[in-house]
Image (tube, rainbow, N blue to C red; front, side, top):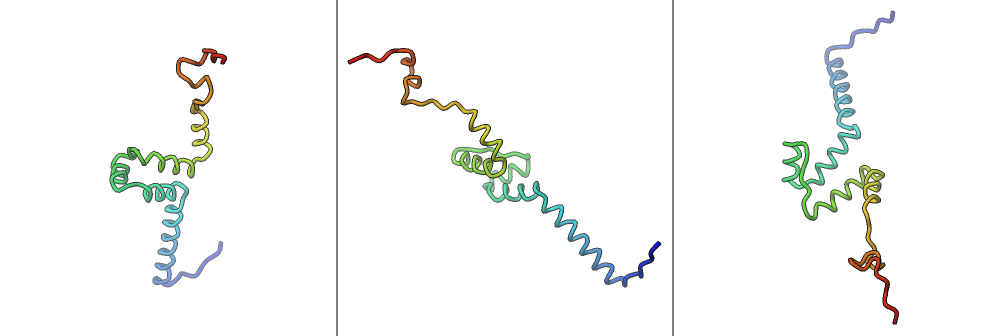
Length: 108
């Protein structure tokens, strides 16, 4: 068994403080912690307050584009999967015209 010389008290305290600083940095620098920091930066003060109190926030009017941007940046594949499930109606085709989908066009 190896024996290490005991460090002087001041040096030992510095090492312990440095070790604790490193641990806190690692815990604050996880993917989840960075994501939460980024989310909180983008929220309005009212949304941030609601998020802190309830764990969620309401998205209203212009915030929808911001929510979509954040979703694309954070979970791109899932956001695109949701976007690709939406039904897009081509209004220029016959199928997109209400009441005329199966009506033949009159010949002139």
